[in-house]
Amino acid sequence: MERIPPPVVKRFSYYLSCVDECVEEGKDWISSRDIAESIGITTSTVRYDISFLDVDGTRNGYRAVTLREALSKALGLDKGRKVVIVGAGNLGRALAQHEEFEECGFHICGIFDIDPSLVGKKVGRLKVRSMKSISAFLRKERPDIGVIAVPAESAQEAADILVEHGIGGILNMASTHIITPPTVPVVHARIVASMRELSCAIRLQRTEES
Amino acid sequence: MERIPPPVVKRFSYYLSCVDECVEEGKDWISSRDIAESIGITTSTVRYDISFLDVDGTRNGYRAVTLREALSKALGLDKGRKVVIVGAGNLGRALAQHEEFEECGFHICGIFDIDPSLVGKKVGRLKVRSMKSISAFLRKERPDIGVIAVPAESAQEAADILVEHGIGGILNMASTHIITPPTVPVVHARIVASMRELSCAIRLQRTEES
DNA sequence: TAGATTGTTAATCGATTAACAATC
DNA sequence: TAGATTGTTAATCGATTAACAATC
Image 1 (cartoon, chains in turn green, blue, orange, purple):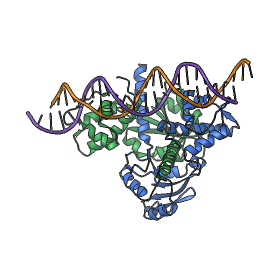
Image 2 (tube, helix red, strand yellow):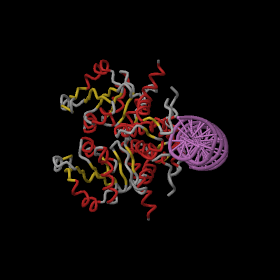
Image 3 (cartoon, rainbow over the protein chains, first blue to last red):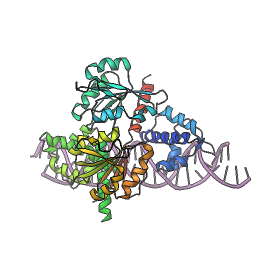
Image 4 (cartoon, helix red, strand yellow):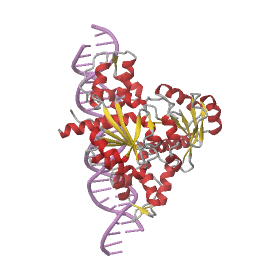
């Protein structure tokens, strides 16, 4: 399959959510216009993006289930993904219980923490495990994705352990930058950065108003 | 102040984290190279970005405290930001207790939920308030940013209430797209989308390997 | 001074979009 | 058929970067 430009991959994810909704509503067909309007982009962009998929449109638009399947496959979601969470603090526990993950095919298979007082605690259907046991766990379970939800100062260390045991990719919820070999993709969630972006936009908005 | 391109604003946030660290370490000077290496971009980009600020570099680079102040001001963080959280589920409660927010100047002033069984519960130093009281609260406290941490199906409704009471901007943690007037900026956190991006990157990586 | 770093711009690169022929 | 929508490409737009003179 052809290399897909990063911005297209990002949008695929939004398209998938949009198409999912349409399928649930029982719509058989979905047009570039439907998608474009629901995410606020142009129909050109939608058609350009979909041209990366092996999908044929008709005068009615695209067949919803076909498009959903193609998007899902392009995103590597056709066989489900196993996820492990490192860090059982507030954020780690919240993510472990985030129902949307399961709904979207991300199966959380374990949550770990270094703090002995958290080990053994129930988090949803899981129990917090000790970091001492993570190596054996990773070797056995071979999760695809590791979510880092530890304090900034331990984030790189957590990433190193995951990489060492062949993790496929990392979602970094910590605010620090982490480094991995080029074969291990990382996505930085950057919640604080999002808040700062907002703050900047608000500032500009308010200086414009006055 | 000149309009700053969105990708530059994003990077400003990373620069600020990086410069913050340097200041804490007691470094007086920081060069475009220091910043570039720590986030993995080119020195050209860093210098181009900094040219949007009112900061002068020297042969030693930039004075760390000056740069920090300029970045902070550009991001509208110079006077702190009041934040309200809508939704006291797992994610909302985790965010309310996320210490990093306070450290970065985001002051959480209230958390709300519609579920009576959650109202009154302690979340860190706050108590969950009823959605019935949010209007009065917003009128009185006038927070800058609203964080939406409710289920997807209620996200738009929550946004509407915030907008109606003059919120400055919205961080949407729900997975659905929300619509606001052009004067109210929204940043979508899109955690599921991040996981899907990773999934796609992993798929490409693995097809390359084999 | 010599050396390091900035500030700036032209060139490059990549993403988005308008436009319209092709299609069903 | 007539009408709606796709698929495609050339044009546009915007972001990144290399290069180097200016600076301290």
